[in-house]
Length: 406
Image 1 (cartoon, rainbow, N blue to C red):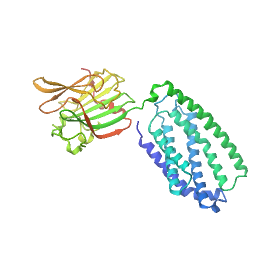
Image 2 (image 1 turned 30 degrees about the vertical axis):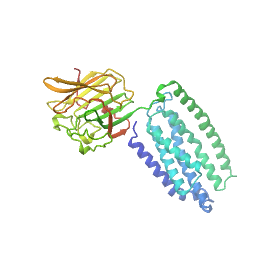
Image 3 (image 1 turned 180 degrees about the vertical axis):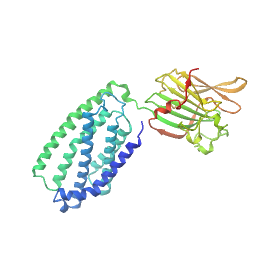
């Protein structure tokens, strides 16, 4: 899940446009639409301007939502996790408006506490619905309810300016009745029933995907290990960037010690002993390229092991992945097996069940350079922690790198 820049910009534009309509457009336009407006008390003028702003934005949001429902294929009613840019842009427009309306109500003392709370919770729910690409059908149904609001707000404006006995007031009331019954009774019932059906029959309804990338320093029984973790429950994939053992002895720090990037130094920073800097994004970007990367794609049952090639560049080994996507991806279970000798070099042997299957890791005792993570992680210090849907490239080998089976 990610809130792309385009939705933030749309929300910002909607917020600013709402302020402009209330502060600039409505004072200039309303005297031309309603002759009694200039003689109204200031309090009533603010009520009419607020209703005019709501009229403009409800018309925009309501018509967009009905267009999406009638002419778009972006809102399947039987799918939970599904992205719909049209709906999320409409939500961005709506969120920008209700945020501006809340600010105006507080700054100009418009409306009662119930109305202020309504706009507060509308701002919150709008942000949540815009952030998570799920239940787009139900979110659009809620936006379709805005179809009756232009007539509700027009009724307010006509009443305050003294047009209660006009033909326009009567016809507007009939239109409000029809649209209210259609948008808020019929389609809300349809949306609620389909929402309830998904909640009862689809187990995914109760699962919120975990999508994070983090740079974490893990305190073990022997030392600190720094790594970059990527977890995306949407695509059932994880990635580990291993930085190895810091060259300085930092084990005396408590688990509450918050390390600074500039304080962390690693053995061997030679370029040919690390993965390339360009073309790859790393969670611990401030630490530079890692020593190794491991990509686990559980849906395909594939694991990619990336490490620097002696000739330069990247070597990639592809192997079969056994196991399921972890239920608790950030909870490790690593054991120290013992010291071994491989090709005459003494190494520490570690085993991890982090991915719900055993992996053995070996670290050179002399240099501390790892082939992966190690040993009984007890406490973690998160140097960075960011939530949001990861780009697809994060869980693929870098461009131009060919992976070979062992």
